Length: 377
Image (cartoon, rainbow, N blue to C red; front, side):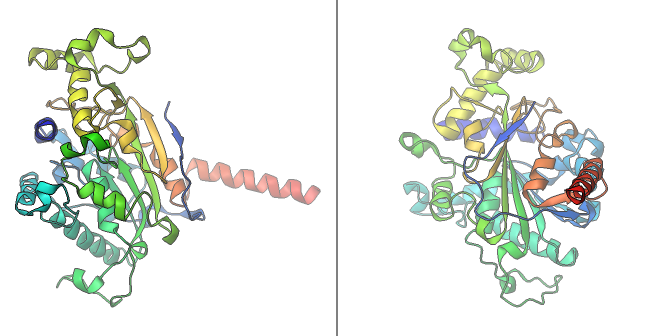
């Protein structure tokens, strides 16, 4: 029942359309940093559950200037090399196909490539292959939002990359069947993704019906870091979950994590309590525990992938709108106002030093001074 409630929370919210970082476990392979022109780097965006590609291009019909894609273009990425996985909102009904994955759906032993999510993973692999060919063989940045984060991990899988299976009539393949995922993907960056199944005593509530557990068992954490794929996970710390009857018990140090007055008015008028009580319901469905902090939909701890570079953003919300409402927000991960809080660190982790920007110029000056001092010694 909790899982069903979570779907009711997340889907309508999409249909209506001082950060810090730490690394609990360093990546296994150090990526050398090289000066790179961002316009040469392809980007593939993996939509979250219930999202349509348009949500990253023209969110809530506000105009393309508010889109995540436009935010990337403003920072130097080539619009011709930014691809949002082609996906219509109604296609998410295909997740219900998992009902026919017998007995796995009912025994909580589904796999990511099964009937529920396999269609998404296959399409993502084909999209990555097309982008690789279009860019002249460049490795892409794979950006997974919400469920798109763990599905991107599943897409990478064990690292095998069967080019022949991915071949389509409109894509010219010349590498035979010798490629690896690391030949196609430079880094995986996730935003508000669910990287863990619920706590053990609540595993029966997992909306993936075992697929996420399988992923973490077979391809845990930054699984392909040794092959040169960088992993970055970004999580928001914006809303503390509290049950409706416990709203007055919110601790003093959490007063900034209760949502905006506008959205709380909407929730109150609808009889849902507040942003904190809505978050409680969602957090409980994701993790089994409601009294956590997170981005309003996914608990913070669940967004941070073991072994990845982790970036925590205070005040950042899960998606293009306040959860469960039609209210747009500029506080979500992909908003223009938030992207600079995580993108530079993510690029650095991927071994990318942006050519021609202010930071690069300052770095070059600093390097020159160091060389001069070394000559004097």
